Image 1 (cartoon, rainbow, N blue to C red):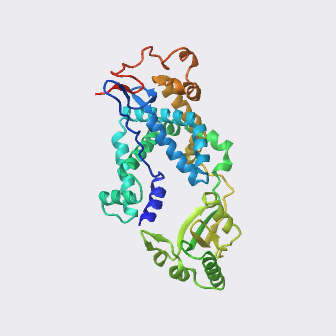
Image 2 (cartoon, helix red, strand yellow):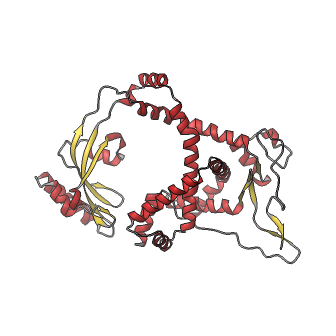
Length: 384
């Protein structure tokens, strides 16, 4: 259960295992100052600390290691990109603050709960408490995982409400029609296929034996064996730990060719309707496809208002999102620690004139920084 849960959690939530790293406590003699944490940047009323930067750096190192880098290579790459990471954390903090201003917290929390319940259901787990226990068993911190998902959902919610939806719904019919006339190739229906599949898992098995079995099944199918019967007897595709081919007979549905994975599209490219593909090697086994039906691409473009809106929105949102984030930065009070200011501030496009010979970096119209609370900004406080 342990390895299975871990892989499905990553696939279902598109998030990752989180390890909480707290700075080691610093013990000071009576009367001395105690360093609680270093503040790298102040973003309005919130701060980004050295401990949070280390935690984010650790996550990225682990991701790069999974991509094939050594520990040292990954650490060097993350260190080289540290200014970009700090800039990302500042942008993230601004989006979180904006989400609270827009009163999106309850909506986001509901979405987080829904995602977690989906994972529990996919795993056949009957309660959130059991889900938390399974996550801990797999090396995942449930609290940290929820917080990571919460942050991602909030960022998406703000961008969708403040940028994407405004672009999508702000387009006039005249704009849509002009765009359609100028880009008709985008609105011709592509070729589509209906597929059935037999999947043979290679996990824990002899690779050569699994491949030989796949080739033998292809031979039987091309000789006239009924695909549904062969799939029901042999396909090892599962859902919630149960083989699904006895019910589905291997049918997986209809797909537009451009939406298929490149390797699958290549495997069925020259297979006619009713034909059988060669075995396709994947990460976890072999797939055999039958092309149940092919529908040729349309030669005429079809105007669909939502499709045209989506196409224009996809073209424009990258710049619109960048402009939106820049506007948030321009209106915010941002102070970057002197140790990081020269490398981070240019990435945020903060006004260098406002930073020159000044301990504070402030953007926007207000000439006063927010009222500072008692204590040092860099996290140095008298020992209680």
